[in-house]
Amino acid sequence: GAVVSQHPSWVICKSGTSVKIECRSLDFQATTMFWYRQFPKQSLMLMATSNEGSKATYEQGVEKDKFLINHASLTLSTLTVTSAHPEDSSFYICSARDPRQSSYNSPLHFGNGTRLTVT
Amino acid sequence: AQKITQTQPGMFVQEKEAVTLDCTYDTSDPSYGLFWYKQPSSGEMIFLIYQGSYDQQNATEGRYSLNFQKARKSANLVISASQLGDSAMYFCAMREGIQGAQKLVFGQGTRLTINP
Image 1 (cartoon, rainbow over the protein chains, first blue to last red):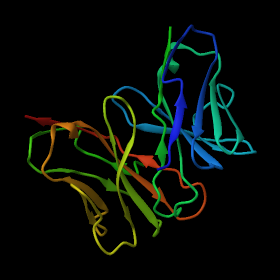
Image 2 (image 1 turned 135 degrees about the vertical axis):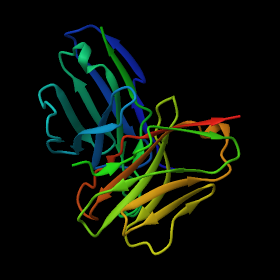
Image 3 (image 1 turned 90 degrees about the horizontal axis):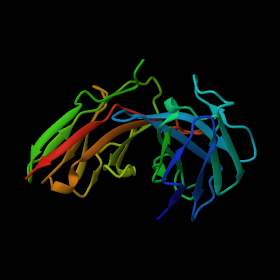
Image 4 (image 1 turned 45 degrees about the horizontal axis):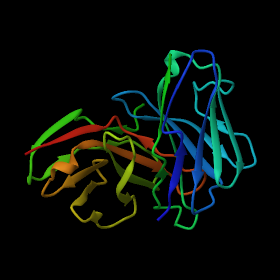
């Protein structure tokens, strides 16, 4: 079945540094990927829609300059948290839909997530 | 306005019993899809079951079934014969429309605990 790989699975960084998270679709090409953030014991909140070859679409309230998204190929999207601060500590998870499946009822396939801790 | 509402923060069920997790939704789009995902403590999101707005029958996938009541805008997940491994967070999600990027909007989740 479709697999989405996310790396790293966890990362600890110092305040003020930048962190890059990769999301790869392993056996299908994804023109669109979605980035979610999940705080402890809370739901998944959509941050942005990553579009291959064009700019990402950010949800209201998400800082574009803080969360840089690059979708340079049909199998790779990256999320860079720039100048990270402790409040950015969260679980970040990417997802994509397999275009070979019907768009109407096909589920999003999720990566295993990245737990970011900013000290 | 909240589009997906899960009113049960936590549920405790005895092993082998059936459990119903509630989900109500709000949309004016006639075309939508409803999804249930399971999130164990490891964090991965596991797709369980899907219900389309035009589907005439309730969806079923093994021990999972969806009690879809369109007029009430509810899509409750029913897990039959619960197992210890069912303990996890469960999220209901909705996708509106059949065109475009079709992002998923998630409910708050329900933490299910199966007791031996």
